[in-house]
Image (tube, rainbow, N blue to C red):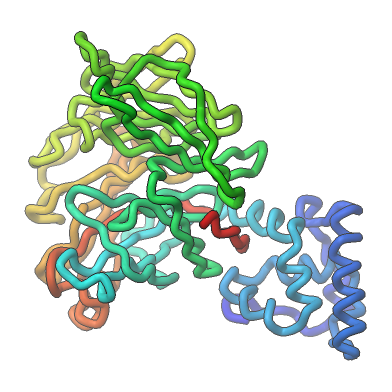
Length: 425
């Protein structure tokens, strides 16, 4: 059980205090205990820890890394029933949500054959004021690749929503489960109240830009049509999910082409249109939307050059369509750290720092840096990710230098989950 040392003395374990949020409710105890009783009868044997109270078993197991839990689950049916129980899954996520990690996704070449294409996922722990971080390899997604025009990676309640050559996938780095979503999926959101992941399809019905919206609750068969509740529009950017709302940039097709943001409420499945400053969607598909301290924000910068500043637009009031603007400076000398590679803005960490990172790995073996920008303090720090771009053997073994550039996507905040998903297909 890597990464965790357990006290072998059961008497000491009995004295440990279990945090209230990790204690099962009575109905959850009955569910797991019934499974345990059935499994124990079938196995006909008893381990040294079987006699411990269920809450204490939970407290022991929940301290293990997620990858280790996947191995422990195979030890016995008793452990499997505990780890697969809803109460344990929720408790593990609650603990994980206090220990944010960021994920770096790397693709291995756009000109590879479909069988050779891979997206590799590496995770890093957030360490304040650290100047370098060491990666942990999580998993590889087969037959998938990012490109200059497409590709994203976002965190949705323990799962990663990945767009690549195949339009949309969900994967869990802990369980290594990968599922493909229906071809018409355009955006994916999460409803924290109903605990549902939903796919949104947005398709043109005719030349008049009349759109057809459909929703699919993942794990449930069949698309549902949404009645058009907003004026016709054209979606122009990728989306971001914040507190149960999916936002993406748009234009009205009629003149004047009013810029705005479409807001999809995942729980109610209703759409609304929020007016936005022209700058927010000026760069179309290169527009950037992020979660900034729980609010929708847009980063406006020159996507093709060495920008020396960027504008941070924040949607302050969703109902009144009110935005605030702040201009942030980016020191020119920091471009020396990344060479001629364009930078992008991937979101924020738990401290609210904006993460800025290269979109590609350099063809040359050199350090790989990302930047953390503190808007309130007007302070930027540089952090080196070790063992990715600066290790020739690593780059060769993962195929990052062959057949096209290695595209980079970063998930700024990811909370681990041990849940499995029902395949919607």
